[in-house]
Image (cartoon, rainbow, N blue to C red; front, side, top):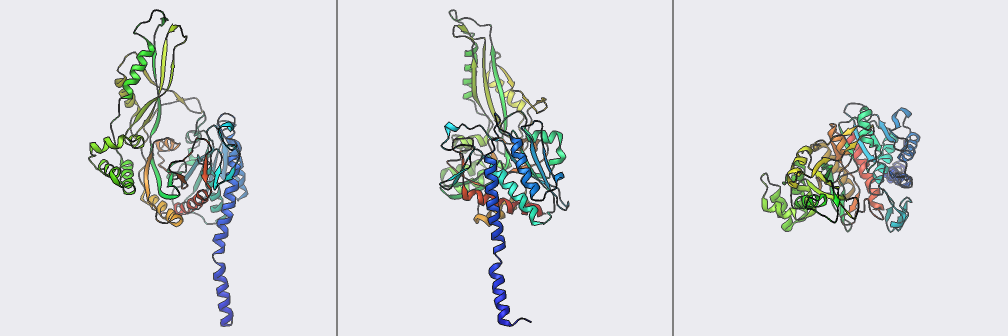
Length: 475
């Protein structure tokens, strides 16, 4: 039997050492996540000269070294440079799997445009610099780190957790998610998906403002406006000019607005944003979010380019082509019109509306063709919003509170597009949850000197781990 004094000393020693284990685990995760992040940034995965397969294989090696069996770590795809990584962490099977998604490819970056080498991982002034630090190799590094942590914990989740790191989200001919759904849906089939490429968490001058759950996104569709004409000698012009027809039609388009339409996501987004904003803008948000929106409030919000894009489908001319010689009447004039369509809307109806707006039978309006990795024509489709899940929203709120304290979490609709559209169309609800704070007025994704704050990255690792644990056991 221990002497009471010795027993007290032993108890004090145990208590003093108790926090060390989780603290050490976090330090290990911090070092590992930084090493993984660096490795990913320094593998060029651009469409032009990069190699996504190299990055997928590098992450596969790390997961295999962590104890994942070879049959649960798959590197595959339709192109030697564009292979995807799919990993499965097995659970008890009492619930359906959850998919965690990020893409490995990045947009192009030229060394002469940057103050650092975009394909070198640089830490300076409290930031990590490099192409993909925001979009979205930070997310890929976070997921690989936390799948390794989940595996090494030895705890079997109540459901399988699936990791997919994919190709060609940013452009190219071999989109990874679309290919996986078509050829190997069973590898990634899930009750729902958590996509780290969406739902940005925002801060302003270091102050944490809100976290987001992207439950919806607008649908990207390009249209071609084209006018054909026999042409002729420029010394004998006529009013029947292909460039004039096209420009006058585009001028009519520039004055047109699609009607404002709110859904469950955007209505909630406005309501929660009003609580953060205050002032006249908040009043307009509240009035616009009512079951019968106030028209004056909609007009006021539409004057802001962000809220205008949230409220309605938008279509804008982005590229022009015309003529064939400086001394000849144009035989062809063509424009690309890029539309971001509200979820659930039929792209064919948008096309019909554009034909009415340009109001000129000589302007031929067609969809710009897109093809799958197999060369098949992809027709534009409706993309439904994902229903808000109270269980997931609660998991996000509690995981965020554990890192940052009470934090507003709002559902959002992104005006851009991600691979979530393929999953939603295939019947897999998808929720963008980045978990890494970005500067509200200086995001830099796709831009010069892309960067993420060092501490925000490490906080994102811990947030995502807590969310992953919550999702793995949520009822």
